[in-house]
Image (cartoon, rainbow over all chains, first blue to last red):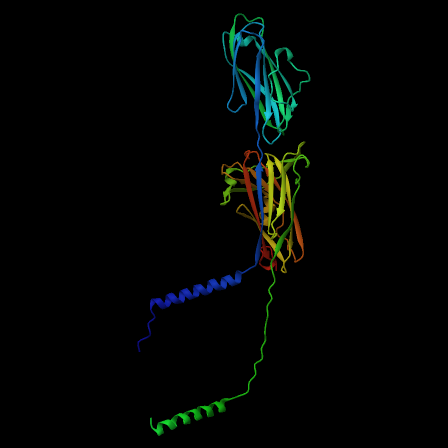
Length: 196
Length: 231
């Protein structure tokens, strides 16, 4: 008698059935009930935005030329002075605004000489006065050399909340030891940080 | 059709009827109806609130926190929901003089999701989120895992390293962290609840005017299938 030969399809069926049974039984064995709770957190950051919102350069000399320009980020003012003479006096008035949503702190002001003529930098002197925090309008039309400096100045650092301002008066002068007339390119930059 | 053939049909019917009579018997069936009423795994968030819910200027003064440890680039893993690093460390707290940021929390109608929203955040801001969960089902459960932005954390891992740093842009400079405390590993019987508080801190690399998202999933499992279940 010839034994009944089983074809490859038969064995494939057997393997598939065994695999299916294993998967089904495994699923049953590991079935468990579970539930997921969710905690979704969203954090919106505030805005830190301090800038020079208005400024004025006063020179107590009629024939001295002054040109000034704010930097693109409004954190620095470039000022060029011409025809400066011994004993010259001038003022740079900066109003620093907090336009952001976070309290800020004015740490200081950098005064740098970018370009000069014939050694005038050795005779250039400045003094900085701070006032604030203030709730004032950015209106410097009526401010004059003879009004300055103002009383009741503040010491650094100065905290100023959103909407508040700090007034910076920078007194400039060329001492009498300087000879001739000179030019001076200067940069006045504010340094601020978050209040804490 | 002739008469002989016609007589076969009634004879056949008679024969079948006789057999049926022979095999007729009285019988009765008793039934056992088994009804299986299954229980329910059901856990709800019953309360969620933060430590700084009132907007300025009427709220509390802010608190700041600084982590005592900082992750390196190799600590971060990409999870599909951002880069996550889990390391050991603690937070140094500081009270500030101003009320600037605030955070609110609320629960969805189905009580399965808690939402937290931090407003006007800034680097250093710390807020505590308190969560209260309750087993409102009929089967004891364990919370088996936290899944924080795709990273699964067990009780053992939380005990070893409980500060989770989250980096949204993959530059190894995390913008926020969450310090998790334990819901894990304790059996919660029906009717019982658990409460936990987590600290959330905005870190120095956070950018102004941006938004960061943390998603935490708490996976509750029937007690006898939990990884913490001991027979």
